[in-house]
Image (tube, rainbow, N blue to C red; front, side):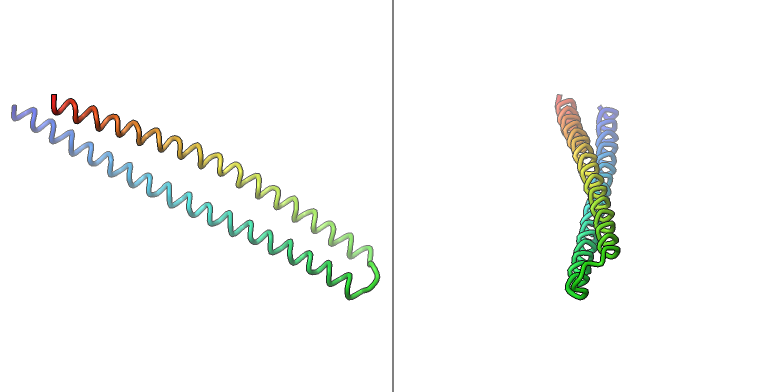
Length: 128
């Protein structure tokens, strides 16, 4: 009987250690995901600011010169295309990262379900 009590206590300690480790992993994952979201939002805002600066420069160029300087317009159009391509790349990156995040969340949920089931079976076996 004493051995059974010691085994159950040892299992409880191991279980508590395991759950503590998993809580730390989940907390770390959440922090990484939150930092990534912030980084993406900052990057998107930076791109929006750059597009707005380009638009402003283009409007200023037209209003100041009165005539359309083809080389400057062509350069501005080229820069606009570059920024749009960069924006598209960032959007694709964000979409991919959201897919990865969803996948990781599913894995985390699966782990939590498994842990809950394991905990339930441990309780049943210790009561039985």
